[in-house]
Length: 222
Image (cartoon, rainbow, N blue to C red; front, side):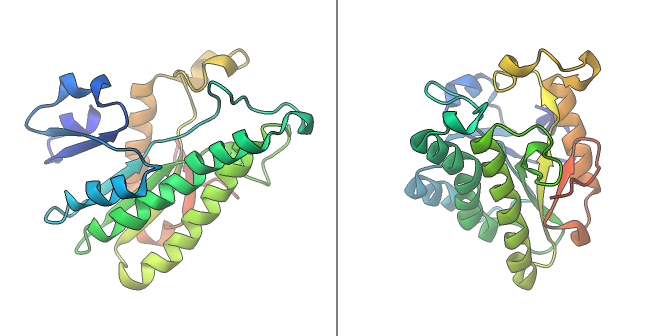
């Protein structure tokens, strides 16, 4: 919504597995497309839609912390192979599949940003509480993948910035079960978080490619 309302943005493409949730907002500036980021064939077909339209900014907002059969582990005893793989696929593998097929469609003539929603809990050096094995590991893996991707991309696309974004604790279904100890001023609305992250993206330079940034622009140490 914020991108769509910005006068410098010509077109917004919202790729989602649940188009019914936002189809009512579609207009001449917003294009909604149904995409399953775990289906590589689906991603290939979606990327073809941008063969004549260079992308200036791409934000991968997918993520899983909990679900029908998935809960963040409080101890090692709770670790389960199936849920671990599910979290890894969605949080780490899926964004790289998006990168694989969409980075070739990004603008090569000026600054462009490929960004993924990461998390501070993916920082190994910042881990002081333990637990959440799957989620922490998936975000740490994502951060490494983004760094590796930035090195490769720089060889052929020197204007492309690869970045991970930590949105803070946002009042959504993902964080709802874990908000009890969050200070009110640190629990952001989706609008607040989106505004903060877009400000971070706009301020990024090519020399920062491969790094992870919090909502306030501070770099997160791996």
